[in-house]
Length: 151
Image (tube, rainbow, N blue to C red):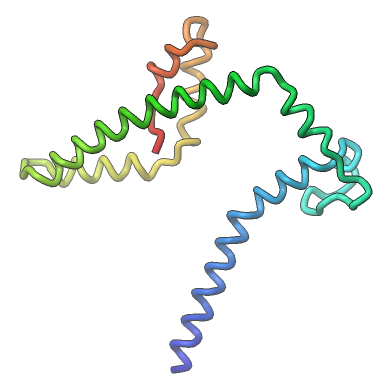
């Protein structure tokens, strides 16, 4: 019984550590967004600003940016197109892999899962290098050319 209790406590500790790992960057970003430039230089990024120094000027600056709505529009277009193609090709691939027996099926499944294991941000540097050329920069053809994974 004691071993089971220790196991449960260890599981809870691991879960709490995972929550801290996930929430820490979000909190740090929030703290940075409500600090002034002086507070960012003087205080620790791990600490929230003093109540008297909280500012929302950073939010005003971002929300008044004329390119924000264009960015949301472009993101929405890319999201819809990516969803359509990912659902279509993912469904077809899943059906073929599950329904049919063929030589090399285990290799195909393994390659599929290996591709899913690579985080998207790892490929961003290479994708940016491709897009940064004169033909693809600020053009929707960059999306068609470099549309990798959007799971």
